[in-house]
Every structure is written in structure tokens, then in C-alpha cells.
Length: 124
View: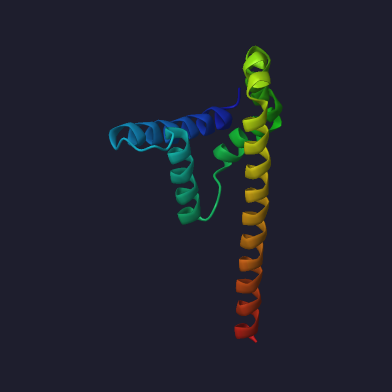
């Protein structure tokens, strides 16, 4: 393995650890990895660039992203009876969450479009 990859994974795991500790110490209802991801995002936003080590690690992880769906698929197969018993609430939750996500995405896109349009008119 390349040193850049190992350093990048170490950085990612360190942010996850900080997020996990923060979540547990403050007893937040947010998972530690999500907090770690937010902290990493804020760090990258402040720095303005992505380190070569992080780029190497994230590219390698993203190339194997499909493997992360294997545990979820196994969970579905293991709990197939439960899913069969609760198909209606699961279906309703899936449809509603998809519609809410689509609506939120559309509203955010419109808001950003308006902001960008407003910024272009002020620049002229």
C-alpha cells in the first residue's frame, strides 16, 4: 500500500473517531461518523483544497463503493420475513422519503439559482 493512501485513511479514521467521541460525550442523537464527516467538510472548506493523501484515500474508497452495499443486501435477505410482514409501512416510508428528497432538492436548486442570478446582476 502506498503511504499517501495510509495517511489519508488515518486522517479519515481520526475524524470519525473525533466525531464518535463528540457524539458520545455530548450525548447527541447524531451518529459519530456523521459528525466526523461534518468536521472534515468544515476543515476542507477552511483550507480550500484537498490534500494529496486524502485524494488518494477517497479515490480508492470510492472505486470500491459497491462493496459497501453487500452488508445491506445481506441484511435484507436475513430479514426478508420481517420485510414481508411490514411491506406497507416500508413502502410508504420509501415513497414519502423519496418525494420529500426530490422536493427539497428542487427547492434548494431554485434557491441557489436565484442567488447566483442575483449575484450576476449585481456584478454587472
